[in-house]
Image 1 (cartoon, rainbow, N blue to C red):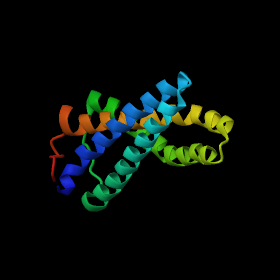
Image 2 (tube, rainbow, N blue to C red):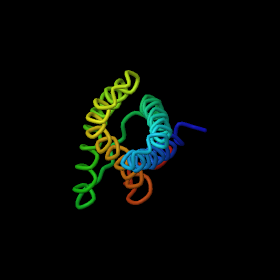
Image 3 (spheres, one colour):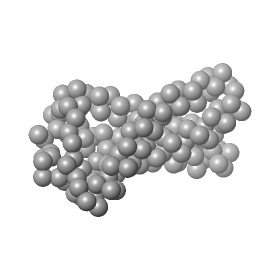
Length: 147
């Protein structure tokens, strides 16, 4: 494995997180917390793995501009900006949502989780979309995979 493999691995971890956040929400909406808990643990582990991989990648590879213009830029940049801004919000939100779990304060966990889940899900989904746009669907000429 090399640094250039990390974007694909990170996108995969985001996809796993998306699947398990969605499954956890599905199960808790049906009052099946015994199924909700493992889904959320897996989502948390996948998101943590993503964050570590993201930091390692950008420490080694730096930031790379896409160079998009036109219609693709109008789609890509608003999605990227909202993804990044909400990603900064997600980490503290997830932590604040987890604290009441350890205190067995289900009412508080539920109240905060209603905000955390859609934001965390949006960040996970848009992370995968950003990856596909940048590396597969519309790779800009100035950004070759592995450079």
